[in-house]
Length: 195
Figure 1 (cartoon, rainbow, N blue to C red):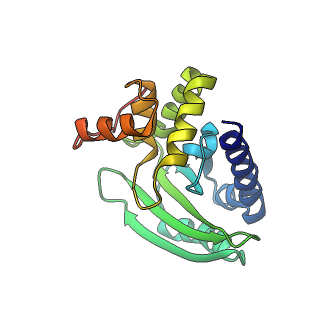
Figure 2 (cartoon, rainbow, N blue to C red):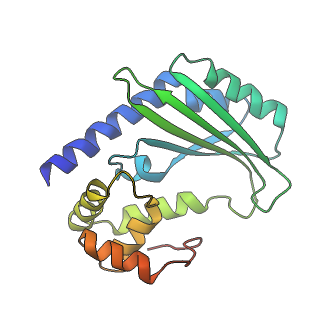
């Protein structure tokens, strides 16, 4: 298990370095936004999928201001792609930014920055989930999650919440158990799930 932990710790360090190098937080703060780190980087549960996830909050959503922050981020030479989706007039009330970053070792990182209107339906949900995971996580469940993430074939698409719910709520501890848990819960929504 030590190898899983070392990989997770190395990815954790590198992810935080990339946040500093690309000035993600400063770019959003420059438009008056609050940028919160969420997801596997915030919980220390990053394994093979190199993702940096942020929820960014402002009182109102301005496409112009969101583009201003995104342009600053996109100017970093490591950013090789950036995509935008306008979901302002949907239940999500957000602007999604998805970027691809190539690090100094040639590894590709996915960056998801979701610019959300403060007070909307999803305000704070991902932060609450990360906080609850951190509160209930033990060394044994951390190791189980990291091992499952490591053992998942690269061709299989499993979202983080599936691992967390399977281990923390379902008692899953091996890949066969994860596969069975996913089959039993196929079609279930994990929106609103908290450990």
